[in-house]
Length: 240
View 1: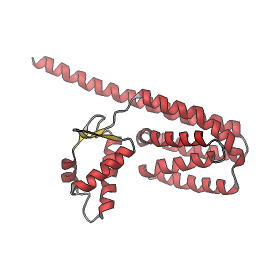
View 2: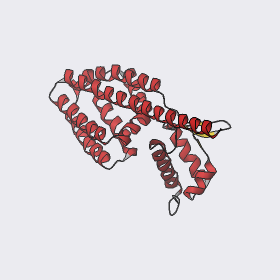
View 3: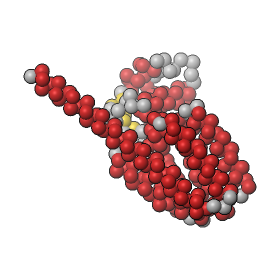
View 4: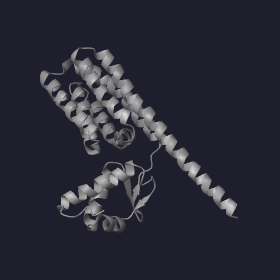
């Protein structure tokens, strides 16, 4: 795969990051796997510099870690981390919606409508890079009038941390991409109609569904790995 042909320096790093990200989210690069710059550079047909920049970008997204003496390693996922992140969101985001949504302006609703159009297009195109940007914009626009700057700042950080998890969910389950779009549309409709308690309840369920699906996906992945490892042990034992 010669990613580097005919691409400018910045674009080469972005293209490499996109390909590595896709492989991580697709399970080709497993959690804990070491990614060597020299091998990636050879495979992608580019120098190590854009590869290094791509890895730094992916570290900022939480998809991998760059460790001393080891280099880039695909980040491990844990059910405990998922539970903690999404449970905090479940507590804070319905609260913010109820405080802020009554004060949304016509300009806010116009922005939310445009966001939804782009979000649906990105989902249909499986444009992974656009998902989190548009999702964050949607949520933060709804919360902008909450008059709770510390809580809003906390939620914005949580959304960034949850990005790699939701990418896994939406990359693996087509029905959840459709569900996410429909739930965003319903949230906007409830806010327009002044049904803020219903909107807060849907926001709770929206986040809780993602949490549940991610925990199940991760547990299935761990069970699959354990089964493979057990098979290897049996194979080695039979060879003896």
